[in-house]
Length: 334
Image 1: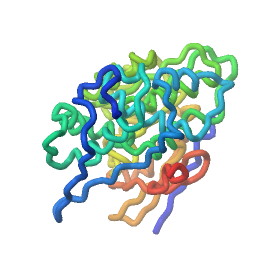
Image 2 (image 1 turned 45 degrees about the vertical axis):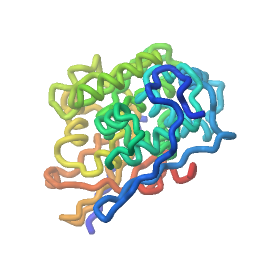
Image 3 (image 1 turned 135 degrees about the vertical axis):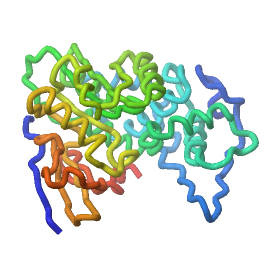
């Protein structure tokens, strides 16, 4: 096996009494009925009620903006789960949401590829199916919590007197890393925070934008980051580039998609090297060629030119300055 290495970034009751819920109240929790042709997902880790933060999502986000507040590990799966819930149920971000209601919704998502049960809320099930791609990483709160905390707690790499924090989130989905970048910037003391998410699906972009507006945060534009014209939507070169897509709904990387999006940024802004990026590094593997690459933000995750047309599988991410295999993301929460 040939291995190429590239340096890391050195630039430096259950839920009927809350707004937006359209369900019919408590329902019996139904289990999926798998057969030999289907392998339904298991309901992911959620904390028990004694560990659940019962405050509304908007209050939890506001607390995280305070640089003096501790970034307690336990709060990040809560944050991911509440964001998931608010994306599906607009208005719920302003009120306490019972853990049982979140658990019920995630049980529905875990079997959204299957047939409905007789008492399912059809409108909710159809929404989960239409938005399964952006919801996929958030449907595992341990994994999403790991990512949220990693972004929000990155070491400062900016000059202390810079007036503006400017970030971009590629393939933004539900916009959860737009939120994470805002938390990071506010905790670093930036008063002017500008983060733009780029999302190819107009329906997903609109719904994510609506939620971010309700939280008083950044923006999502309906645009494909792989489009050569997409960087023109940014007011200037970003300080922070993130994506939450890798390894979950963009497991296979090709010349298009993520690689193209980063290459476009580099060309448009003249060899851009961001001050920070998430993931910090990325390990990919090509089964056809037997090549393993460690890519990084220092070269905007571009491999050697002779491998430009190679298909790569994501195997691991550099998070918290260490390599974590994909299957172990969020492990410490579970």
